[in-house]
Length: 331
Length: 265
Image (cartoon, rainbow over all chains, first blue to last red; front, side):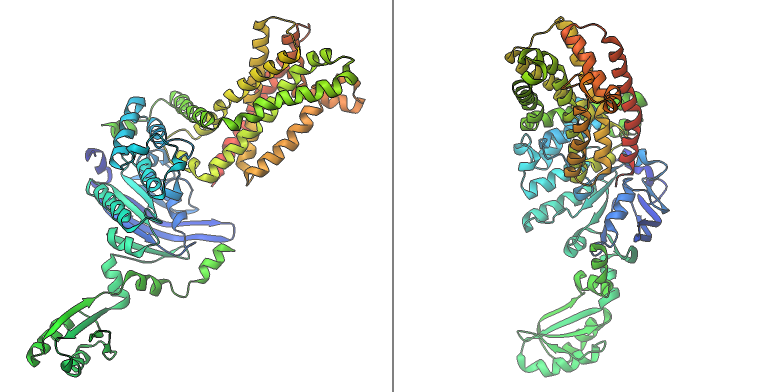
């Protein structure tokens, strides 16, 4: 991958993807009501939200497929409305945003996109072969895309978006329907793209995926940004943490419970399965305090851990009370 | 590296031609892969020739042979007009499947995918010409002119098909489902081909209908083709009329189709 072509925005420290106040309505439906985004170069940005929250509309505006009613957006320093042609030369779209031709073979698809990107016939063929090899599709390269399995199809989708070595890649649910091993493979590919300097906007339904890949997450609901932070801070913001302790000797359980009650942020300690106690805490200091007190009392422990809430819990907390959104859009 | 070449905008007209031809190539690959999609243009002319010549020929023209000579150019024109509908159906399907979003996200001229699709249909129209000639010759049709004029007649028909197809392209952009494109297309083309000189001479029609029939673009095309195939004189004005209609169809429907394509989300 060429690093030289990528620092268009990097040189000025401008975000690779920048949106300010994006708004879009379809008739009575206000799909976006002022969405801001800023994605630094070489990072993965997760966009999460319930169905109909406005994720797809946002991506379609950023990829020049739709014009915003209000607001502005720049990709690699180019305005998506005024300089759409340059934006198109800088982006790659996958999945539901832009499909491949199912009647064409994997290779024919990639060669077609290569020639349309002005790589020349020879260049397009070479690039297609390179991508087919990288995505382990060489064996199926000359079969029509409609015969591909789910995993092969995802890989071809991603390969198709990479033909022009884009600066910004819009990834739509890259692992939906893949088994865990294939999912890990796909994550590896995304990480290597980012290592090479690409910027990725990822929409996904799997919070686990956002957690594994995203440097930063934006949660959209009702066409508005309701949260924007790193996965770690998002979790902290919503839930606080849980301290779990298992004393080595079951007879120490009452004493341990007393100690945990002292460091708790409110609720009383809760007994879990296999002799474990859990208590909500509000800061990292609680763990150190618990350890100090347990040591002072001479209580041995076999397990002691501090957990952030899962992103699922965060997501649910942030978007709860909005389940009617889904019905609104489905109607 | 290639990325750098990417950002340099090529000369516009060449870019449009080059990208349109790449997308034409895509259409041809698809046609090659799904030959069953060509059934309408290969079998239909034979079916129409057989039905009309052997069922109505005697009644309309006195003899099946003279009716075949009269009918053959008309059936060729009719099949091309009906074959044009499928481009609207195909484009509608393409849009539904999301492949056009890919094209729209690439730094290529907006009109290239549509122009490419229209050019790609040239194969269908050439096939119509070949299969109509094959069926007609097997049934006893004979050229009254020479092969050169016959080829000119076919080219005129193919050109008309290419220009006419901008109308179904427009339809494919504004109608929601491919089934609706097929339905509306058929309901438009059917009266256009029957209220013409394809099956009967214009003189046999009621007066109020003659006005429409004489100005039907298909009438001019068929009149021009009859002249070119059979060697009958006086066809030249109809060639000019046909070319005028070709231009008119492109001037009206191409901008409409492109505008609808840009609006399409």
